[in-house]
Amino acid sequence: MSSKKVVELFFDVVSPYTWLAFEVMCRYRNVWNIELKLRPGFLGGIMQGSGNKPPGLVPNKFLYMNKDLNRLAQYFEVPIQAPVNPFEAMFEKGSLSAMRFVVAVQEQAKDGDKQVELVSRELWRRIWSQNKDITTPESLSEAAMKAGMSASEVGELLRLSSTKEIKEKLKSTTQEALDHGAFGFPLIVCHVDGKPEPFFGSDRFELMAHCIGEKWLGPQPKQSAAKL
Image 1: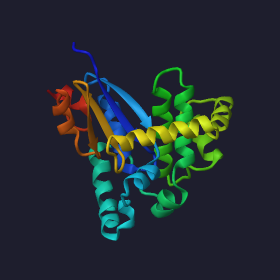
Image 2 (image 1 turned 30 degrees about the vertical axis):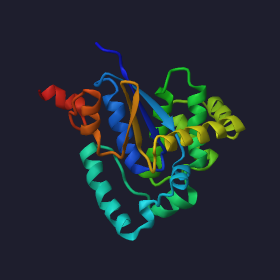
Image 3 (image 1 turned 120 degrees about the horizontal axis):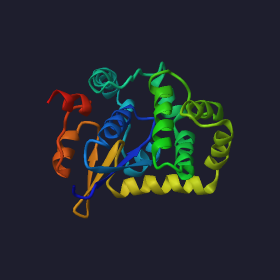
């Protein structure tokens, strides 16, 4: 088997479309010959740095997004349920504290990205499935403990997430995404023959598969493979 191609997923748990890409890439990490690297960033910094405007601020886009997410949730089998007040959740509360916490989880992890995957998924569930907060220490603690972390571990992560080291790490990763041309999340960067190939959005998987010499088997690859 040829050496694994590195695929980086730049993400922020405030983005529902990124949740779709996150789950798909986690499903494919053992199907495609890839090394998946989870790269927590800050979507607010991406929008500001690229000069982009969030779709939720454009009325017609916002209406379309609600319908689109319902269809996509069924297709990808991801339990997306919009919060009661999406504008408040996405733009007033935001995700800065949550993403600093995820970066802290990654910095402390001893098992690769597994803990990052579990904590990130719980945060997505809170905001985009359960209509819950992801900004307070209590909210972050609840998500992390549901992901299997102890109270003492969570306490240390909360302390770490407010340090300059973690804040700078989040800024650095966000800037790295901007350097790849990001104007939103998800940003998936496939490294092919020494060159980065960036893909934006959760609807480019067939093209991505072609780029890295793999096959797109649908949103549930193991189920599709079993039918072949």
